[in-house]
Length: 324
Image (cartoon, rainbow, N blue to C red; front, side, top):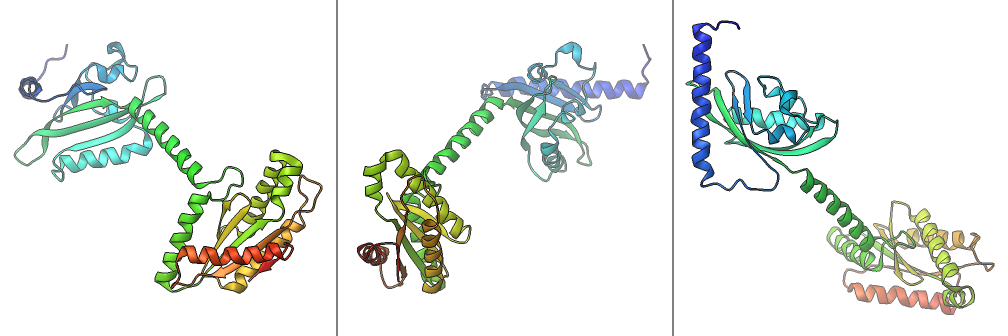
């Protein structure tokens, strides 16, 4: 065994004194603080002068390391080297800010790689408890939690919420906006048009004789007509304008900053595209449409009523036409 110099012995004594002092303080502190949170892996202590970390074995067992897998003296790099590359920069930055006294403590969440290659999620908090006369950290203590399960549950909830939002906003049959969503979009567009003083054109498109198709060909085939029509409308408006299924066979198209001429061109393109498309039924499918431009002095209900009346005129005239 190598004989230690006096300076090395003094350094070890100082290190042990610091550790003992912190352990005593922690025991006293634990009587007042509640650390019994789910996933608690215990406290850890880092002596910056020797770069040795003392910790609860739960911290390493959670990532698959047993005592025999660890070096005799565990440096803090044993843990930081296992942090996910995408998380490491933020973790080290936060730790550095605290060690420079820029923030009172650090608290970070990061992915850490287990021995088997999988990833756990740790939430770590720590603070410097002792500094030298120049302010450099001598001793740091912290506590770590395994929040992997909570993060997995949060991600699952996020996906579920995203799916719910999609269900609320996207009509599953046509992939256009749902009725509630397109009405919200209509209100938004009307408010923006009023505030920014630009035109807003509104188109109603209806599938001619749709109720007859339902009676003659049944639900499945008639829904295919709706689905195809929705796809054709989306192909015409693309990303420039917003379209939704307003009610059963009626579609609403919103054209921000567009006058009647542009709206008529869009509506006519939809009408011709539908007419030229082969559907799942032997009949030729056509659509009718009505167009109006939003007047800021009118309510949204009045605007919808106005464009609905134009659509009714197109239908009464035999369909397959657009009324301005």
